[in-house]
Structures are given as structure tokens and as C-alpha cells.
Length: 166
Image (cartoon, rainbow, N blue to C red; front, side, top):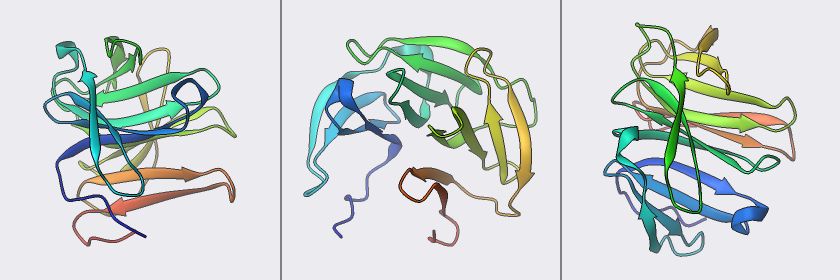
């Protein structure tokens, strides 16, 4: 398996039918790119709107065609129009102690958006209509986390940057 080159990625999302199964990356400067899964080569697609601040995580709901993004600047959830990369604020996480959700992922089997906070190592359920975060439980890990959902085995995976592990 070839790994993507080490670059600062705010988030990655595998986008479905509307985007023809493309791997999309967004850098901390809001540059959106298509990533070639075989080579890691990036093709610029545009720039996400500035109201997002610094993007942290991306998740895609294939059924609705919604691309969700979290922000490190204002601890909020957005939905992004993938035709022009304009982001619309859904709402704040509503928890002053949860500074950033670096890892977010959509679970299509339960229609749930999950988020991981580096602040407390907590797994949260994110409300896609209000942005509110509800704590499910804590992992005991404190570092940047990414989440990936595997539809084939109904399993959510998490990375941990402190231990460089899955």
C-alpha cells in the first residue's frame, strides 16, 4: 500500500457518486485537491470559502451528497457545496471545552456523524442540523485523531498521531 506523502492535510474524504468516488483533501489553507489514490499526486480543485477558518476534518455522506467540515478556528460544523466549495455554517459544537474535532466520519449504517476531539480523546456524535456535539465516551488518548469508517465490516477506525498508530 502506498501512503500519501507527508503534507499538512486538514482532512480527507472519499466522495461517492456525485464526485465519482474521488479522494478529496483540504489543506489548512483551505486549498481543495483531488488525490490520486495510487500515486498520492494532487490536482487542485478550488479553495474552500474563508468562513470556515482553518479546516480540520472532512466527512462525506454519500446518500445525501453532503460534505461536512469542521473548523479549528471557531469549533463549528459546516456543510460544503462541492460544486463551488462554499461552506455554510451548521452550528457550534456547543461545548466550550471541546476545542477541535480533527477527525470526523460519517457512518451510513446509522446516519451518524462522529467526531474525535484531541482535547479529551473523546468520541462525539455531531448533530448535522445544529452542530451540537454529544460525548459518547473517551479513549484516554490525547493527540490528533482521524476517523475512517469501513462499510464492508461495519467498523470505525481511528488514528493516533502521538503514537503513530491505528
